[in-house]
Length: 483
Image (cartoon, rainbow, N blue to C red; front, side, top):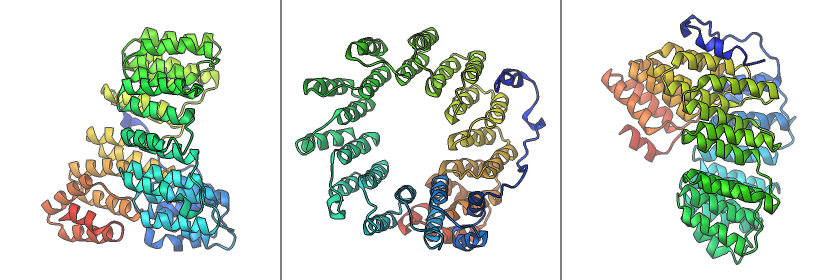
């Protein structure tokens, strides 16, 4: 089994330095997509199109879509690839999925003008649809640009797309997920005569009020839904159970689960995962295990989500041996762990100061599941806080080897660690790489590096970085950071 030796491995006294944490690939993969990705990882925005030409790769729709998803955090670097691909003779035109990926990437770095230019391009090619506007609304609300999100909904008709219930629910969802449930309720009340709300509309509001948190309002919406004759489906039940559990009303949530069968709804693994997670948060490990066993007794197949909840519950009460046994049970049932599985384990170990064990688990689990941004960020931060910068850099090199594009937060954690160590040179190298990939640095990270450079009298380097930033961000942002 994959994890049979994990526990033994993690109890060995070896220090992490004794491991050969090699970042050298065993062999170069001659896959065309990998050649594109390698060029993307190795070149700045200014020279990326030339580098892409030199790969000699003939791009396809599938390849472009894969690269855009893989480099969704790379900002303007991704956009230059998008432009380059469109000019290739072997490439017909961008798909809807490619446009949507690029729109999302541009919105992340707040390049809204370019984003709307792509929307216009989609309209001219008759590719634009409701989902296009739903993506933009989500991105605007995530940046707390509520007026812009409402404008996006209202401008749909001008682009030849008729607003419908899907768009209405998309707006409600975007507002609720960005903690603007009151605005969502206002929109719902003003437009429910124009669009006939369905179970999804009510579910979105219940979830939003639950996260407010405002349990009485969530209950009110749930009652209204029933009174208006809207069928309560499994999704709504799951959301209501989740809301009640987060409000500490797990017994009331259990009551809803018990009545589901009467309404022809069988509790799902998601609902049980909520119960297991809640019991774990409340240190009720016996109840967590009981809920998991009840799920299995009712023939509900456990998935990675509920397994992750059970692992988290065991870790919460410091029972790591049980957590490792759950990993083995997953293996025997053919349920593959995911990045969340890894992150739950690492977060628990690091939080308890078990850093050596955390690193060993990291090395073991990345062989069977893909690490995500949180995984790498956690490990890099751990080593920085342990004053093990060389190990943090090794994790960074491994991440780059895997062609994983670091997020702004991952960059910031390592740059901050280097600044703390007084390594301005290496910090500047990473800052330059970050800027060249079109990723907007945070004000805090820029400020810390700025202070270190001023302290060392390296005004020339500071000026160089400012010139780089001038090409990527607005003058207002620069004045706030560098002045």
